[in-house]
Image (cartoon, rainbow, N blue to C red; front, side, top):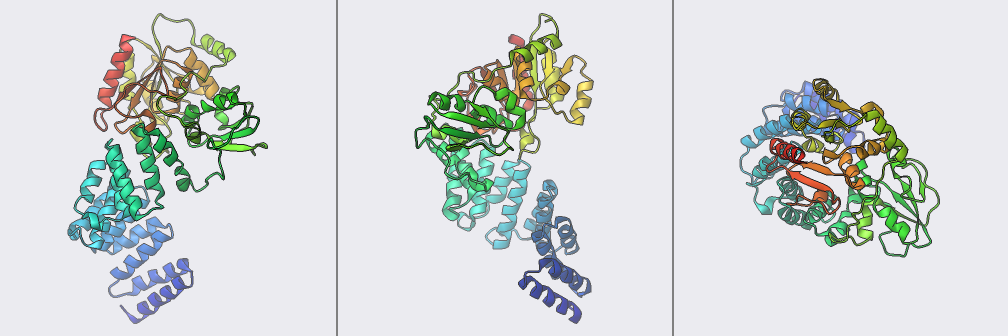
Length: 476
């Protein structure tokens, strides 16, 4: 390292100690540009830039330091941070190949980070293969957390629980492991343990409600605020508890997202938008804490239909649909919110699902309000499929349309929870590692008695599910 490069690097160190990382990055870059052997400085620069959330610049710094194994590892981190998981996994593999001894700390960390990239691609088998050479005694909490996530994707919840608990032995405050254990317990139907453990979700959210009502006091004669959380489907599934609280003598104030307000009118004494200031109340509870508050077991799930279409809206939809043609009317939904982590795993390919259903001779109605451009182009080539996106202004409209249909075919989406909550005939297409609420190895749902579940026999196999669902529709 030249003299000036050394001075610049030393200045960068002092700036870091002084709490000025942005200025340190400037001087570290200058030092690398002037150094005779710049790779170590570029490695330091890449690490600092990643800390500063400047992943693209970190990528460039690490690329300039190649082929150093540490640079390949750093490049993997920079690519992973940018969501370029396949590229990240390739970079990690190059780093691993250069240091194959998994007992060495740097090699173990590279494998653990590579497993994280594989999990972002839902490649659970690769994640487990990457972790396998690391001796158990060398595996930190993160390795066990990755192992648990992989086992969950492979629908091995009992083993996932064991991995989560090993993670928690090493890191007792690991929120992801707590939540992973909770969802695995719930998937197994172990509700007494699972719902209690599910309260750990607030550790990840970082905004835990203070002193929520969890059934510890009698709500009779008191006003309780029920706040929606997570997605539309979660609200639709757990709002079933609002009438139960009213039956116990509570005055219920319900705060759902605005698109659900009209649909849920009548389930509570007062409705307020979720994003509005709440009215005065004595108690409060998140909706997804109510199974715990009620001590819900598989045998005591309140499963009677609790969502209903507005008669006037239903009449308008009946007129819009026109006279029946003597065939089944089937509503279809194939995807949920694409922003949900690994939400793409729940997406059923509509270019395969819709033609398979159409071949049964039914009348198809798309139940999505928002349709991405690629799907719109595909729908344009299926003139027999009716799309109602422009008229589905909120869930009250969707419920009215569903009420005029004979059956709903849906992946794990809010539409499935809507149809199930209405007590409509429902066929649900599920990924191999289905969400905990669908339990395991069952074709029925204690949450929705009118639902039939169709599960992937192996990860990614939608063709088998589509064939089974089309066959079921054809027999109706």
